[in-house]
Image (cartoon, rainbow, N blue to C red; front, side):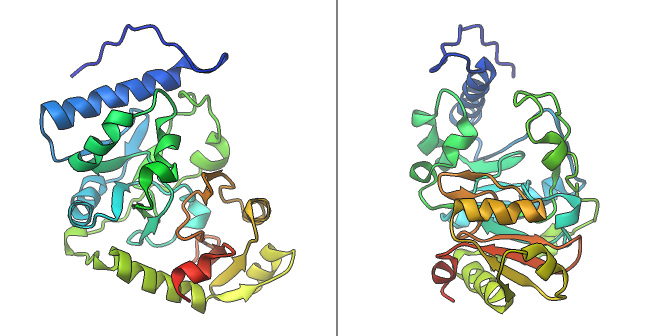
Length: 280
């Protein structure tokens, strides 16, 4: 199928890139075409500047069962915003997240039927990240990315590329997803398991979080008080500082987790209300 769109673009504000409007329009056309006209049950969306891991389709096939049965999951993504080589370790690890990652993702027809009538004119991905749109549903994401974005000069004009996209680790391990039990990702089980992991991590306090974390050989949790405090801590480690509608990238219940220097050790950045939300 080919979408030939010759309509003039009217931006909402002067100086905006028309590409963001073209992209949002193209997504709506393509997804309406696939779900409404051709009646597909699920669709995987993959941008044209992305390389995929060998287990990309096996991963989505396994995750499709979750997506079909668990209505608290809005979409499944192959992307981890903090998937840089120094922050990942386990190619089998999957997480729930309150932040929509995009960049190689799968949704169902029922979800698209809900989104299509109110689809935005531009900035569709940030729109999906609004609480009024995702309605507290979550997203499945891997620890190790199943996609690699090589589009340094795409519509975002290289924003974040060298710092966050270039160092991404693309999975190269063979995982037999059909034999993996993914039931731990159900809403109730994941909340308990993740909550225990966070509770068992050693708390670190004070200004020099990085040095203290470096000197401990266990999982560590560092509490942040607000967005500014999170950005300060995230900057020390080099993980994404950005928030959208009150949610840090890759966060679950306000917790951002990543590995310390490609090791088994995990660092948890924990929000002021995270422990209560996790029930610990």
